[in-house]
Every structure is written in structure tokens, then in C-alpha cells.
Length: 97
Image 1: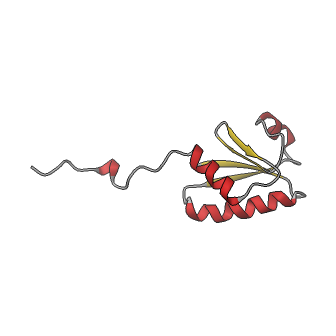
Image 2: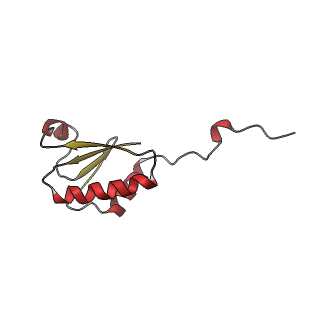
Image 3: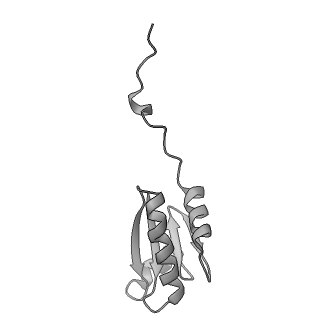
């Protein structure tokens, strides 16, 4: 699963959100985070619908706010990522006769 993380190096709230994301990466091993520095890529952020930082984007869903707690970020990830399929689903063998 891919998350776009929009931030600024001058934003202390962005640093707190980045720390929360790093902790959550331990719970979501398939999580990849692309960090977009808005001072370098303002047009990309605007075209993505980002109007406030810190902001996270998964597909078309955006989470932004003054403070993004670890709980809010986790809920956002869980709400926007399909649950993993049970282990072995793809290689399930037919029942024995």
C-alpha cells in the first residue's frame, strides 16, 4: 500500500506526523511512504488536492489537519486499505475426499 505524505521541512507538526508514520510502518509491513516536500513541489501538492500540511493521501482519500495523531493516521490507513487476505488463500488445496 502506498501513501503520499505531504510535508515541509519547516513544519513541526509534519515532524510529529512523520514519527507516527514510522511507528505505524512496523504494524503495516506493506506500507510504503512517498514523502513530498511541498516547498519543492508546490504544483504537485496543489494538483493532488492538498491545501494544508501535514497531509496524507491514499488513492483519492486525503487526511490533513493541524495535528495528525498516530490514532488518526492509523484509522485513515485502515479505512482506506483493503484488509489482507488470509494466509494461504491463494494456494488453498481442495478438501481431501
